[in-house]
Length: 191
Image 1 (spheres, rainbow, N blue to C red):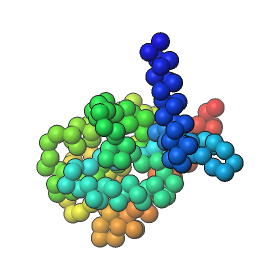
Image 2 (cartoon, rainbow, N blue to C red):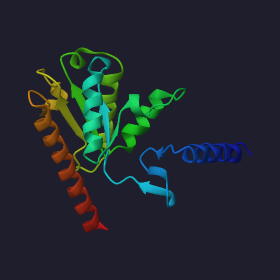
Image 3 (spheres, helix red, strand yellow):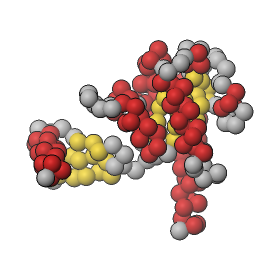
Image 4 (cartoon, rainbow, N blue to C red):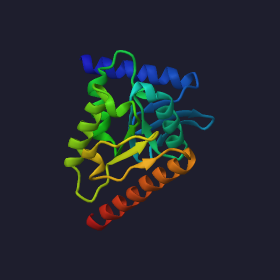
C-alpha cells in the first residue's frame, strides 16, 4: 500500500513538473520532456561519468561537469545530483557503482585531504576490481601541478587539465569515447 502511494505521489509530481514546463530527469535513464507534440522520453545515450573532487576544487569540478555534459556524456557531480534529505554516502556509492567511468580530480589540496574524497577514490578502486580486465574505469585528472598518489599513478595514466584546459578536456573526452566504443564492440562480439 505504501509503495502504491509513493508511486502515485511520484507520478503526480512528475506530471505537475511537466505541466509547468519543467523537464524531469531520471538519473542515468533519461529525461521526460513536455513538448508541443506531447510528452516525450529522451533516453540517456552517453556513458555515465562520476566526478570526485574536494570542496576547495569545486569550481574546477563544476566546469568539468559542464564540459562533459556539453560533450554529450552523462556526468555525475554531487552538487548537481544530490537532493536535500538524501543519504549522500549511499547515493555516492550507487552513483559510482552505476558509472561507466570515474574521474578523480587531483590537486595539491586533494592529495592531502582525509575524508570523503579518498573514500570515493578507494571505493572506485574496489569497483574497478569487479569490472572486466579490459575496461578502463578510473581516469585521474590533474587540475594543477601535483603528484598523483602512487597507488593510482603506477597503474593508470593521468590527464592534465592545465596549462591548457580545453586541450586536457578534449583528451579526456576522447579517452572516454574511445573506451566506450571499445566496450560496445566487445559487447557486440560476445553477444
